[in-house]
Length: 303
Ligand code: SF4
Image (cartoon, rainbow, N blue to C red; front, side, top):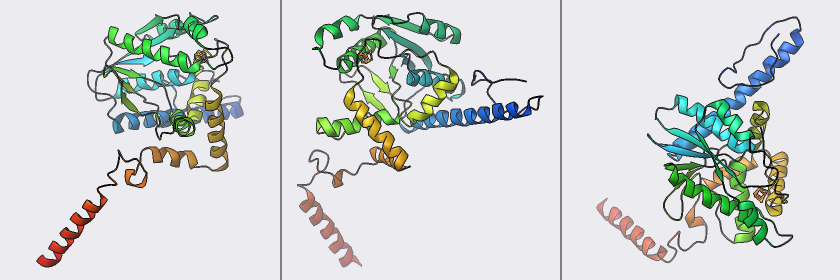
């Protein structure tokens, strides 16, 4: 009897078996089927996001930022699969940043990546000391930490000749960011699936943009990724983000379909129905009206 203790996407297929312990086999087969469905869904969503936003082109060298969390492991796994099946050739290079947090398990990622045979780099930058020094006591450190990490990774992409940087943000990250920006930033913006960095040097892609966090968490659990927690620094997670996350999770439970609709809204903006004068020419409405009316009068005269 074969037990499922680890799911290898290369070999995981539906293969119900009838052994001595028939009941156990049925459970295993069911688990395997569920895993296959989940994996297919994630692959499909990543593939769709890549196509919709033209994230990957022939010859791209993509730096996959690997934090050691569930999202980035999942992203790497799905991108590796796509790489094998995509009609375009592209290369992947995984990069993890060792921020010199006390207790960071340095061996975990190299061991995992060596096992996969993926090209990778560990970038050592002591941002931990900078963050500790610059953040006032009692304040959350995550914003500065992420900014420093982003800066270092963007610079490193150039060094290793990567023309794209893949980040593991998913659908909920995008929605949370939209609410945080509305609540505290007075702006209607989220996280785009594809972005040109401010200095114009890097194109950032978010292949997991269409994926649900719960699917990623489940996939990560079944794949038994060697997760490295992101609070080695002893920092509290960003409290406001946590509150918004809980709000979304509650809505998702109480009102199924609401998150899907909200995410669709992010992809379906009507500038004329908002109030941003830079996005829509409200002052020009009279001129537009006059143009429309004269067009109608002309059409009327011709007919
Ligand atoms: S939890 Fe710690 S390591 Fe993670 S982003 Fe926040 S400050 Fe950085």
